[in-house]
Length: 254
Length: 254
DNA sequence: GAGTGGTCTAGACCACAGA
DNA sequence: CTGTGGTCTAGACCACTCG
Image (tube, rainbow over the protein chains, first blue to last red):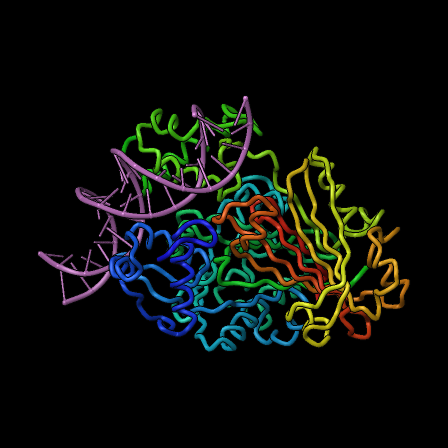
């Protein structure tokens, strides 16, 4: 490794390894050489290689399994289209679910998700958005979504009990058209969606559940659905590994 | 520093320093003690403090000026509302500009921006979105926005020459209502907006211009404006330090 | 030139995975 | 038990800022 164009030898090491990966020297899902070996090949100390690999981890290009080694990532960028034309096309079996499955099919991955339904005391910010009192009991539908058995999304969707209790929203399968169709059936059809998007390091729980490193980032998307009368009938907290997703929004002018 | 709850002593060090900042021990804009001193106070090596500070930099809580020291950040989260109700309220002097000024006023910061106008050969992705040939000449309006003299946004807005050449879009000041009003005057009123949102490490240029560290992230937002006839009349590439911004989108159901 | 952060090497020890 | 990455200390040198 000669001297540096930018600063930081580790950046140059990162560039070299990135180039190797992109040239196909290490295919998707394959193991990289161990750090010690890379260090020797490149003529630097292992700590420098370690730092370089963290750059690539941050970019989402590689994935480290401690004790096993460093792998080239399998998952390409997943697209999420929040509103607009594509939504309608993929609406067969319910909003997010149908779109997610279609998108993963497009990428050649197998989609799977795990759903649980519970009643919990609403977190403060959720309660506030629902216009409920802090600590009020609400229905929560939690979903973890996988692509080829790697977790790619966590979501927790909250509904007011007076609407959701005893309805199909409290069942694992919400039926045709998904949760929004059920809300409509119940006389609370959403008329306006709002999403607040934030980017932050994952919490420790999130890092574990989504198999992320601490120097990666997640999108935290908080979606609210309001009826025409202005009542908020759903708050959905969605957490996505930022390096795996691209978001799309569209809306009419004026 | 005793043993760790999570792993990594540097995380604990980061927590300690974060707590000090949040308790007000180090006010906004003030210098932290130097790394050597923090290391001594906390009984760890300087390299460990350095790593801990990188965590706080990643979160946007502190800002490092090499050779000067480490400061507590001055800029709180800035909100950007892409569509929906708030847009109309703040539309006095043109879209983004008016909303940006209003938001910074709300935060008690002084807004300023620098605009340049040029004709350039369109980058490949911009050309594609504009439906132009690669390398076609287009008009570009570049803007850097500041809050209290810290850069908080870069944007490059591209227009087809056949629409923009010789119009007020080629002037530094686009006049009342901003660029979209001028497009409307010219018979190309935008009817549909689309934004693609991505998160990535800053390029070296971006890191310099936005005074960011390499382990921070930017939002890259690519906005396109289409007329009712389906022609794309603007492509705007917006780069924001991710830790400084929260994005909001809203749209009607169906 | 002195102060301050950024990085590198060297070597050690720890934690986790798998045979 | 061995292999692999994660981190820590120690000490050094460099780059940038400011007087």
